[in-house]
Image 1 (tube, each protein chain N blue to C red):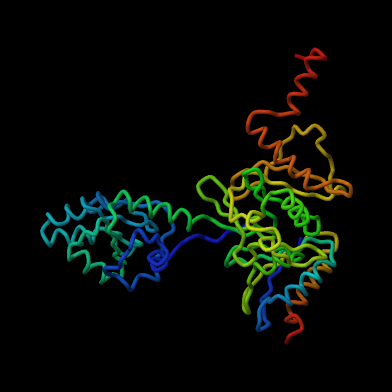
Image 2: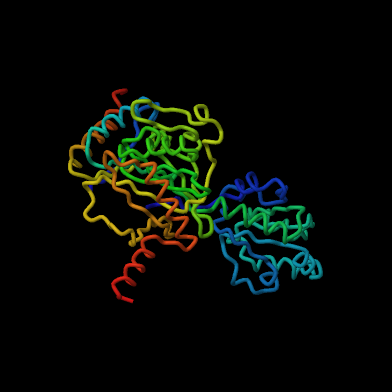
Length: 314
Length: 90
C-alpha cells in the first residue's frame, strides 16, 4: 500500500490555514512555492537564536513570539544579524511571528534576501501553536483511497471490504433500509489522524451508490439526509469472502482477525457469502458483537468457560 | 500476479463512458484487477464504476495495473489493449 508523501507548500499553508489565524506574509515571497512543511510539529526558535541551532528541523514551522523578539531587540544590530544568520535560513521552511509583533528589521531583510517566508498572525503563541498543529495534523495525515464501502452503524464507522461483485453495495443498500447510513460506496478515502483512521467519501462520488441492474443511484435523494454521513472513524472492518475461498471457518468465533491500514490494526470479521445468507443481518450482528466485546462481553468465551466447568476442566 | 503501467492517451481522459467500457471488460474476467494512481494515492477496482471514476484520470495520467487470479494473463492483456487503444477514440 503506497500513500502520498504528505507535505504542504508555504503558499498553500497561508491560503488554507484556519481563518482565525489571519496569516499575512511580511517578507520572503520568493520562497512561498518552493519551501514545504512536512511535519505537524512546530518549533520555537528561542534557543536557536541564542546560538544553539542544532535542533532546527527543516520541515517544521518556526514560531517567533514575544520572548524571541524581545531577545533580538536587546541585541546590537550586528549581533542580531549574526544570531539570525546562525539559523541556517536556507533550511528553515518558514517563520511565523505571533501576537502581531513587528519583526526586527534585520529579520525582515534577511528573510527577503533568502526567500524565506516570514509570516505573521495576531494570535498569541499558545493559541497559534494549537491552531497550526491541529490544521497541519489534518492536512499532513497520510491518506489513501481504497476499494470498499464505509457505513455508519450504531455510532461507529464500519469498513466493508471484498472483491467486486460479492455484494458490498447491495449489502450497503440493505443496511440503509434498516436505518444505518452510507458514508462511501466503492471508494473510501482513509486518513491516519494520530492513532485513528478517519474515513470519508471522495468528493466526486459522495451520496452515490452503484447497484448492478439499477445503475448509479443517489442515496440522499432517495432516502433523505439521515441516510448519508460525511465521515467517521473506522473502528471495525468486515471482509466478505466467497464461501468457496474459505479454507477453514472458525466455528466458535474465538479467533479475531485484524486488518492493517497505515500500521494500525482494526478488528476484522471475515464473513463467508453464499446464497441464503442474509448479509446485512450478519454485518449488523458482527457490529453488535464488536460493541459487546468492547464492553467486555464475549459470548464464545463465556460458553466455553461454562462448558469447561461442566466437564471439570477448570 | 502481473503488474504494468499504462498512460491515458485519449484526449478526454478516463471519462464516464470509457470507464464504463473498462468496467464491462474487467467484469468479464475472474481475476482481481486494481488500478493505482500514485500521484494522489487512489486505488480503484477496475470492476467498479464509482471506484474507477474516483481516479479522475485525465489525459497523461499514469496508472499502475495489478492483476491477480486464474485468468490474469488474458485479463492483463485485455486491459492493456483497451488503454492502448484509447478506448476506441483515437
